[in-house]
Picture (cartoon, rainbow, N blue to C red):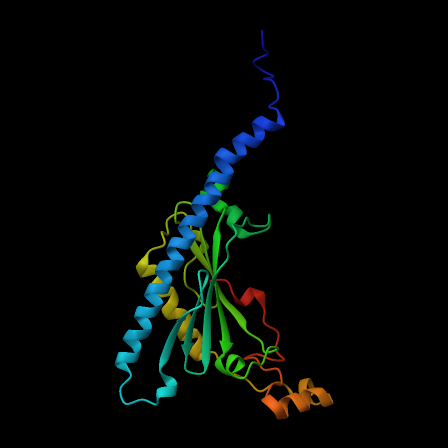
Length: 234
């Protein structure tokens, strides 16, 4: 007769089967949800850009917005002198043990709720691509985390969606549009600053030759300034 207080230990094969049936299945659902929402993001982004362009009357064509699909996992929006890159990662992620997500009741109730796909939003200067300045700096201004129930939160510049509402926030077209609008607004408002004198007072011959040929001296909106990670939690 089996000891009810000490049931037989599962074999590794049984554990593998159980993990595949639950953990891996949930990760696949997370991927499907994230890809579905990224595809919707592309549609909303393209639509919003067309709307804004229609409302910019008699304007210099250089300030018009432009949309470009960069493939299955990327989309680009040119916003005047800026470019926003929206990028979906193909893998599913867990959070480190010090992350605030572990303090939410939603995740404490079921740890599988913490598995998320990621859509990242990067801000670059348009001239960085135009002149192929491969050493120019871009900044991650936001990350959208989506789980298997389509719950989400946004980590990034300025307040968007609080992680405290992860248990109730469901990603949808309206939420995606709001995120895109705030990302575009932030990019326009995020100005290019001249670097501190001491950061650029010495240059190599190679740098100057490169600059003369192609204007490729390294440039970024906050070159020479520290970009604090604690400044990017929504």
